[in-house]
Image (cartoon, rainbow, N blue to C red; front, side, top):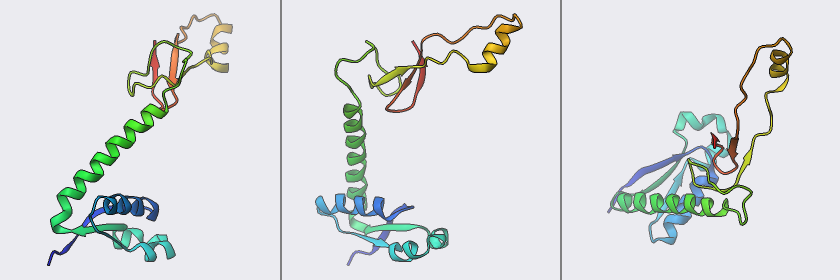
Length: 140
């Protein structure tokens, strides 16, 4: 008989149950350890090693492959979700490729104003943009 091995560790039961369900949909049995204990007293989480998702030793490699594939597909789905029709700008975020971006319109705040008053020339960043999807800040 195959032995159970520790597959992944989680901080909360929601993530562990999501991965267990993904594995079950692909024919791999998973078991969650320490879920009830940590939900009753979350301070015990580090003492017992967190919530553990366990799989049979023979299913370990296939389970890794399935969850890796799921995570790649999930990030792609999020990227598509964060692509908007008729964007305001005709370029995309250089980090993630999303076109859901906005321009920073803050010229520097009070500190910048103080420097201008005493006559020191400063250069404000022009065309500073932020990506709603990944949070990347970039110039264009």
